[in-house]
Length: 428
Ligand SMILES: O=C([C@H](O)CO)[C@H](O)[C@H](O)COP(=O)(O)O
View 1 (cartoon, rainbow, N blue to C red):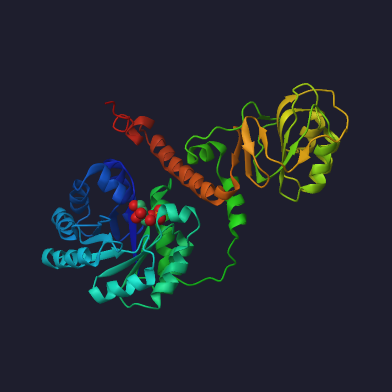
View 2: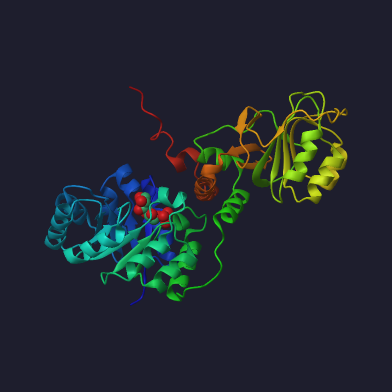
């Protein structure tokens, strides 16, 4: 059977959802899902409109029902859905009653394993119950902390014969992998709906699943993926992903066009004492970023020779709450530096201070091993425990902006695209 491609319209705005669905269908999407955020934002009417606009397509209502399964299936069925998706985390009585309702109203029931503690066991129970599709689903928040959709699919596919739909951060490569591993339906949200070229992105996934094969391409490590993603997003994307966390105050790049991401090696020094700052070059590894608190705006612990030595060691950049000197030479060698000032005079190597202690730089706490990302906008610090998550969330911010930019290019104003007036916080 030809694999099915389900586009998940996880959007908030009615008109955008219809337009994006149209573009996805042009690219080869077979099933159109009214995503849960969309249903919550605009109501069940979105299903009626999708039914009307796409009479030949399968419409999926992602209801994420936890209770009263029968009534929610009835609502979605009467609005025009062909398949209704509810939660496997619901009690089996809810799922069984939802299935009765699905039979009564002539729709199919998909049951979503998202957040179920033992998904393999639950999948077997769902098979017993006789649901039409089991949805192997890693939710967006779980994806951000590294839960792997394909691993989950591979654990379940061996255990059940019920048709499997699979979703959770899939792109062309992982969609193909999912189909080759035995899924019948791939569900793709972000990698289609947040693309500037929805039709092109859908087409890529369509082609990949139609020629599905498992590649044994070596996967990146989490660390490699984290750094790659940080290099692909901007520091404003990162700040947005961290709920508008501020960048370091008063610390600017000494030349334009710098883009760096790496782990912090921290240095606390005092008034231009350059012993610890230079010793830190020997401590840091390739790709690390030195982050220094200098304690003076008028005397520097860093210049061209230190930059030269750091560059030779493969150190990615220097970030300093304090001034640097020799910036003409440093600019020429293009060693990336973010600093709070520039002076001519250095201090002496007295040896006060500490390497790899917690410091404050530009008003932001930095611990050794935290992720540092710097670009023309500023320098962001990402706590080491949340590096991968923030890199993934920042990429979602970027993708969303790519799509919004495209819609502005087509003629809408920004407030029209994001329905700004509707989403202003209502006053009491
Ligand atoms: O169901 C979904 C999620 O829980 C939000 O409602 C998504 O549609 C599903 O995860 C697919 O989206 P991506 O993970 O962005 O591909």
